Length: 138
Ligand code: CMP
Image 1 (cartoon, protein in one colour):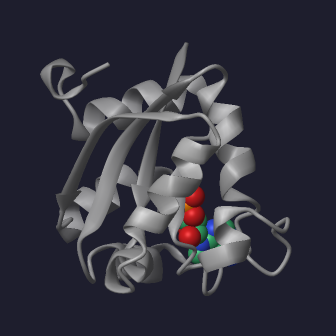
Image 2 (image 1 turned 30 degrees about the horizontal axis):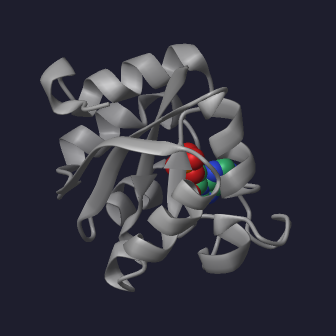
């Protein structure tokens, strides 16, 4: 069993499609073992995305992630990190595979509806960023 962190981003929360995205996650066999709706501050978004701080899209990314609430969640299942990446699809919806969350719902590379951890190590850090052990129910 593995865990990964998922964020349903402001573009999806604003369009009230978090339930549809959760259905895609659950239909693919991943279990939502923690979930909350929060509004990120700029400081929190900057810290969460610190690895991208030198990228040209960083300030736009931080602004977007604070523009409305997000749903943060912990997903659990076999190979959860890699499996969630497959379910999300490519970061750019124009090239994402049919049937993926981003192909179905993302608006652009920035407003791409969902985030998922990109390794088991970063999943542990990212889960810790938002959740305590007590928040996770199996
Ligand atoms: P995410 O998985 O949340 O990780 C970093 C985010 O930066 C990424 O999804 C995109 O939403 C956003 N982003 C914006 N522009 C780019 C870009 N040119 N390349 C990669 N990521 C980008």
